[in-house]
Image (cartoon, rainbow, N blue to C red; front, side):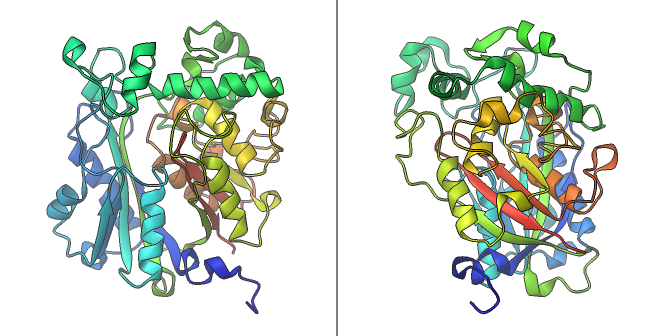
Length: 409
């Protein structure tokens, strides 16, 4: 390529741009209609881009309409299309994607291929309301969310339930424990993912938990699945997030200067399994991260803000290593003390508080925050600059997808 564009990206994601974002109210037990929350975010994103419903000709979502576990999905393609009376040329939704942001990556490919011009991408959850005052249900489809003695597990769950491991909290804890063993990572180091998130959440008016948290508070919290304590786990919430993915050559005259999609990572080269991965100190994000850098001339040192999935704190550490912000096994020392990942550090991380403190918006919240930062609209939590390059990543275990975004004046 004469312009220096990597060949793999020349006809792919670089034909796409993000032109608008939207988000509903976010909170604990809002007791609102999940479809209502979804539509709030979708209409907000459409207006933010300077479009109308008539302009939307595509929809992408994760995971689609499903009701197990409770509150895991607020709406699917059918409900949103019908409520907004959209005429679609293309749509997608489903669980088998490279992480939650796989639906956005699908939209990038669709507009680049000319299947649609403006795609409405959304993700909504209402886990806090759906699960009520009871203990948190499993976040895994098909297990731990009820049924008592009448439940009979199949597939992967038949091998984990007999050992009291119904949740991703248990499975990710095994990865973390192995990383601790191999590389000497400590709980005191891992704590800084949660402490940094809580500090940033204090500047985010939508965050669920905003009160200050100390290292002592973290270490005193009850253990969930060793070495992960309560503050290593994301916070169930109600809320919806939406983004507009537009064809790059169809953004003239829109309300905003678009955010360019420079590269994506979707690869999985190991076994598609939570417990049979070839290296149990990392996950599929290893391959997605490597693919991202193969599709761009930018390097990790060019990134000005990182919004990396924290369904559990160890996943964030694994993303930091997979994306090359530090060496393999060096995640603990890299985050130790929290200075490098602070708002004024060399790699501002999860600037809205992430899912550990701001609330579990399940992947999409990271992309929304990355766009806010690139547009310089982060408010009290805005990274100085503003930054021109951001990475948003989501997924753990055998699911992983990431996007490299650029916005230059």
